[in-house]
Image (cartoon, rainbow, N blue to C red; front, side, top):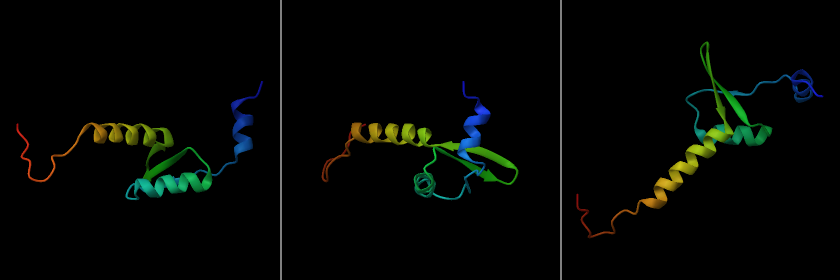
Length: 80
């Protein structure tokens, strides 16, 4: 059975990271270019993980919200 160590040795030792002030587009482009599924977001000594799956969940949720909301056409006044 393959160990975690063996799996990681085959992937290499380079860690990809991005600064927190970069755009989500920049992060997605970097992940696509390097064919990786996550980036470390580094700020000083703190680090967070930004996985591709998080982007998919958030973007899917936003698309769902957007598809359920239809703004009033011009001339219509929304009622509250």
